[in-house]
Length: 249
Image 1 (cartoon, rainbow, N blue to C red):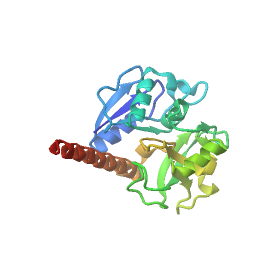
Image 2: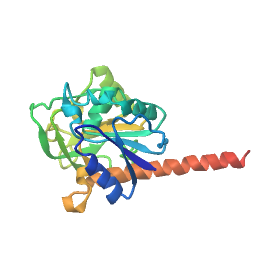
Image 3: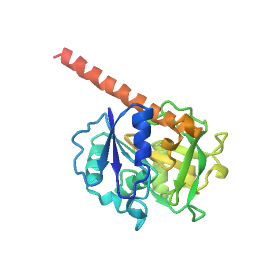
């Protein structure tokens, strides 16, 4: 598999993300300029990543202009075809703007930019990036955003809960989901969600900033390792099914 990292004007976490994927996790990485219109070099086993930053300076609102970049039509098509798409921080905001994920990211409850370590806890193992994490455990992952307060209407929230699409919630260092750990005021402490098909996921915290020993924190690396393991297992399963089908013809 390989990772495509989309670079928008104003992206500032693309290099960090590519470094972790390529040099720490030994994965193939392809930078994708936002004006590109094709993802023909990627298939369903690959992952397109939307990094953090301030695409187009966050004019209008975060992610509102980036959704119209030429590459986003291809990203939507890729996701609808079953390909993996993962948005981090500004990438999460863009995914909500495109409609690939429900809800919106509003100004933080204190109306200020927040840059600090937070703790998040996985709600289930039923997603590619949480399948190897411990439900109820606290993972220290930093945030850096001004518009990170997740919000959705009651019907949407009910559907998220019904379909188990909430994958991360903010918590304290002991894994307790409470207001103490909810620094941006997100509804239901939501820090990350996925779509119904579980191939598109977004989160506000930055796992790429917590993936190396030199940073004093490798909790974020566990999310990437979880996803890679899941994707490789699915690829093996698909190849096995194809071989079995071939042998029966």
